[in-house]
Length: 424
Ligand SMILES: NC(=O)C1=CN([C@@H]2O[C@H](COP(=O)(O)OP(=O)(O)OC[C@H]3O[C@@H](n4cnc5c(N)ncnc54)[C@H](O)[C@@H]3O)[C@@H](O)[C@H]2O)C=CC1
Ligand SMILES: O=C(O)CCC(=O)C(=O)O
Image (tube, rainbow, N blue to C red; front, side, top):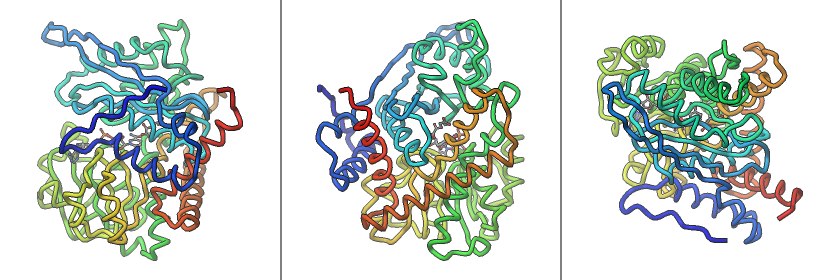
């Protein structure tokens, strides 16, 4: 089978390289065959599309978009759509594979996919965003489907974009098909609890980790990088459980207060300030880099990949890192983190609350019924806690970090499914 290795980008972290490094380590410990290794490594489908969009200026701009289906062995592929200037095919491939491993870790019947468009939502009007999202949907009409490939929000997209996708897809198919996408507004068949679900899963994982390290949440401190969907809900829910949040950050900078930041005030400020913390006065402005070296119990990176690298890892003083973002830690920092005795609750476990509630949304759409928030939250908490406990046990059995244990759990599940299904 021909497979093109990711081109190493000189002096730049590459999330695909990080994903493969951990994958290789877990595979070696599990001892799977060479054939299975290649089956799991190569994405099933990889699509690049050009999307012409009429901008408000009247000029037409062509955006490049991607959808990578890493695996469909456990069920339809699932994964968000990212709108960000840095989106590239290697990033989307890594994110798609992480979706496969994540769904397997929390034991939900989905494969993994991810999509992305290289664009800058901060510089686009609502009309431009809508035309782009509708164009992306039409370009991928044959890829998406409620039994095929089910997108969801990721960085730079949210309920609004999922509503456009659902509408465009439904119109093209001549009927309303809510289950083609999750993370929709409630009125279009969205699930209660989806918006805050990823942050909720981060909170549950953080508390589970604190219990193992005997950290009392009411005496604990945390910093959160990224104050979008994941970061702001994680901060708010951790605060509700007693944790004092000493710093938060977004693209505008980092905000520090050693008495604890008023998270409700920060969210209200961001919501009234064009989604930005710029000018937030409840804290001292510090550099984004300094946020990582604040001595706290828990560090939650919830922005983007490769923010913890060999360059800054030595300065980290947190006892735990709970990865709200996908791939925030470069593999080159893994050994130093382990030597420092820092517990890392890895992305494919810690941020799986989002896809878990997406699965609940899809189930509700398919049975035409709405669950209460209490039911959604109770089931999410149980799935997250069970997944944490399982990964923790495997880490003790194999004497490895939680990250490698999570890969072992996932790869074991996906490879045994392949073996049972056979038919190669
Ligand atoms: N939305 C979801 O349900 C899920 C998201 N994730 C991951 O969580 C991460 C964040 O996603 P969302 O919260 O949905 O995105 P978002 O677009 O809602 O928020 C991103 C936040 O990160 C900030 N940010 C961007 N670059 C930054 C930088 N260099 N330094 C500090 N802050 C920076 C932005 O200003 C914004 O506050 C991504 O890695 C995403 O893949 C993972 C699982 C599910
Ligand atoms: O909710 C989903 O289906 C996927 C969310 C996502 O993209 C992720 O977990 O990284």
